[in-house]
Image (cartoon, rainbow, N blue to C red; front, side):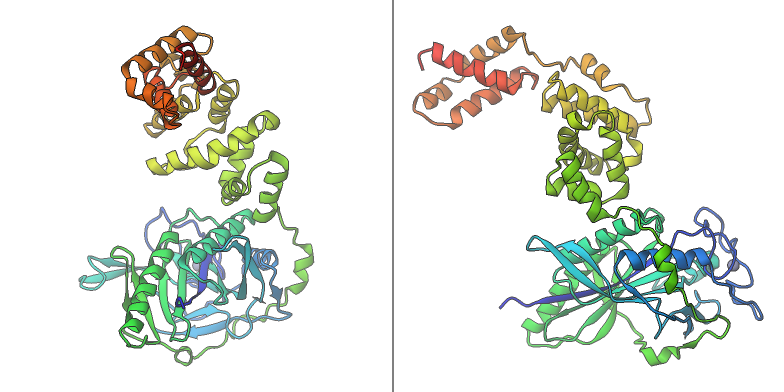
Length: 481
Ligand SMILES: [Zn+2]
């Protein structure tokens, strides 16, 4: 029997509030110098008192409601004590035995198709520690600098049950979670370091390994793939997997045993004496959730006739879903079928190829291109050419030519009506490829496709495929084939 892989995730997300969790310092620190967003509270100076940021708790409650969790009647902040230079107070204010919420679930598309519920254990609120900047290499560098700008940024930690069965499912869980948090307007996935993941992974029947502090979405899948191979190899050789904590070295794509093994009791948790318990369950009824990814996916299928796969892709990111609706806004009936294919398949592919963000593309430009395609003025192949020109212009920060101007400049208009050019190309193709003609006579189906390809090449992809097929068949018939 195939070894069963068991994965659980602990996801830390920065809540996108304006100020920190327990003080008024601004969270907009990324472009500022080190230690410029600090005060006695987030530096943990003696006598400073924390005050809870109401907005951060509201954000966390939105998440709890959207993920179907039950909010505890009373939750509590605790101090988690440990010494590390990024932790100025030598304790982190977090939640321990009374978290904000427990239970709940998130639905993902399972590896075997269909929706799968990944159960959640809990959601709790905590503060981010500061950040160490290692000068040189983390292992052999001469010294490290510490920046407390991040200290006190509100985080939620979402802990899943060990319900995922593959690295792919883990990636889908993270993508779905990211989309949900973005739809809730509590999280900005584009901010560097706004999401960090610890992954628990085991092969059924063996010890579990925790991989700490993975900082990218792709990193999670890579770290899990590495760990599965490592653990399976150990078991195959008759060795056992140690229960341990490992770090993921992103640049090398490997995990490495962490030297120290902290255990729960080492943290000496105790209730935070400077904060009262939270009693916020009654807030739930006043939280009105926006349309979430699943609902929007179903609406895209019903309203725009998108296929399930296209609807999944398009609603999998808030920005992309908004972009799609912008593009088809003018005439959904006419444009939505074309738009879903062109955005979900072609545009995303071309953007990824260029490492380009969707922000750089004007929805109106795509609408313009789709209108030309919809009227049948250019072929799909020419459409891709126009799209590429548009994206390359945006990438170079040149002013973007309207799609119709690109079609005219590159002379990409379909040769519809101008059957002369196609007929000439067909004649040439048949004369130059007597073998294909033989094959066609012998009833080989591939021959006609080959001839179509030849004619397409000669007309530089401008021939309308329907018309080309008709003219080619006609021409072969005239030749008595
Ligand atoms: Zn502060």
